Length: 140
Image 1: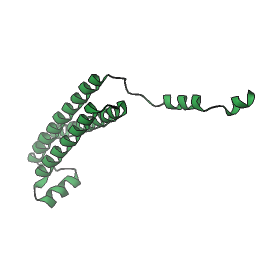
Image 2: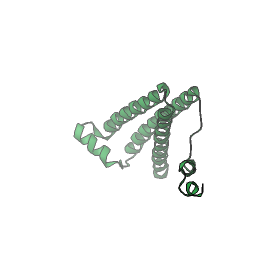
Image 3: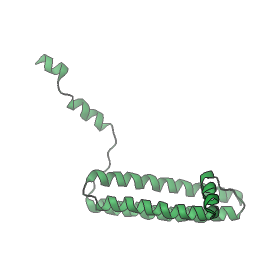
Image 4: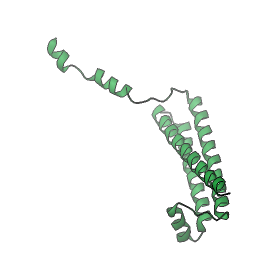
């Protein structure tokens, strides 16, 4: 009995290690659907804010800070605003696919992954939009 206690099964240790990882709330499929649709909608809204604020900032004489976007616009001959518009369409389509996969998935793990992805994309777009608006206000 003493030997088993020393070498015993590691499931207790594993459970404790796994409990250190924050878990997502346990939602019903309809709860995930609502949350995913809300995050997707917020991503679209903040993508539009990013696009409009970038156009406004460029018209005010500010420079685009994303060198990859500038290079993409030059490479395809569409300019910075055109490249941003194309990028926004691709971004919205990609987040839409992630939202649809999360909504239609039978697996709770796939739903959670879609939720994490959309939450990250939404936070990124909020940060980019706030940054753009900050520089517009500071410049005026």
